[in-house]
Length: 306
Image 1: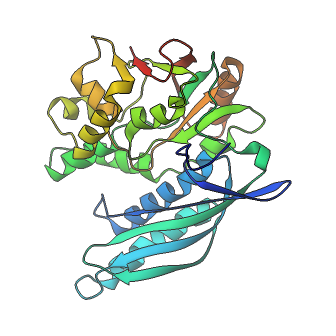
Image 2 (image 1 turned 45 degrees about the vertical axis):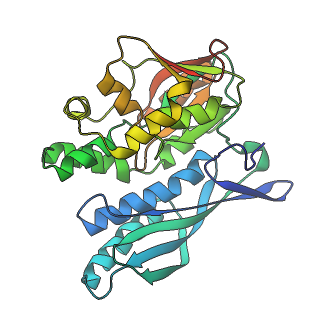
């Protein structure tokens, strides 16, 4: 059941026997200089919570803050165009929004989706024997931090942008015909923070294989150099009592696993059979996924990283 105690990605309201609405809102400040790309990333991030709940986004409203007296309105136009294009890609109708004046630009969406009540995906419900699939590489927080220090190549920045602006639409659509026991998207709490939400009801534990967890090329080197955002340190402190690292898992890899992500991928728990089918369906749709761990009954309520 989805309620205020489950820390799920969006709110769900049941309208009838076969229909529920899923609602979420998210917005933030720019992490890239290009207004159009920022708009795309912010919209993809906002839509992600709906996909993570197993729902199809249907309508959205813009949430905008902009310094109209100090910035060219062409910048705002670029942001809104980027968001609009992602909504078109998601087959989501823009039906309004709200704008305020602020010292720093901010943009995002309030999104409403629909789902059959029996097909809602919640972040809890993983079962013993399930495999864990991650659909996007990690590293956007670390690379964003390194960009500010001018320590990132254009290729790395392009890879980061591509990851962030990619919708989780295909990752959601690839679940068709399968039973997903639990699902969430990886955003501000990092992989381990969101994975902990999936085991925090103390029914199962997760074992993750650090060597299989994908990250954007060069993220490990930047982490070794100390390009760690403050949010990663907060995330690590928050979950440190719930995570057990094997001694071979380096400090830099640990930092990547708590790196706060923007518009990250989905983390899904499926049976071994369904996980294999899911990866094939995902690949056939043009997406990517990696099995990064499993679900068991040892270390219940905790995450073991090997």
